[in-house]
Length: 171
Image (cartoon, rainbow, N blue to C red):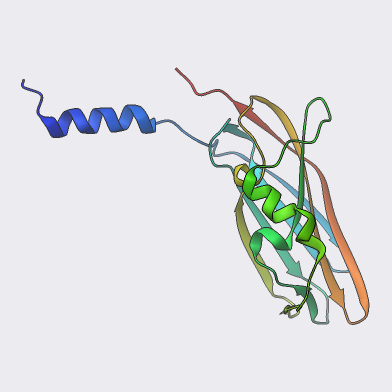
């Protein structure tokens, strides 16, 4: 059988792109916290390949009887995320992560509030490998925080110890 140019190109692309390799495990770890009838849930693959995209799904649900508001800055800006390794060291931010969580993060010149009515929820999907250097194998823990406003009262929701593992690619 003769190998033509297109077949060789497809084989090379598959080798470079690691076709068929699972970037993330299908099993996820989920953590939930509820404060003042506002529920924050984070879900991340239990096991993923180091250096690959790692999807973090965050859900905020209003189970209260009143409307709540939060400053809408964009999915990556709306949440405070921290990742630590198994030695309890903060994982370094990527260039994009430094832009998101840098010195200007706290500066809100013109606040744009988004409202969440009773029974409503928002779902965000973030690539945490875009924020943090997750290129090393190991065990990691993540913290996720979100702030909402009930009239004049603020509520901080914080998830601690959302654990996940990064592994090398299979040969």
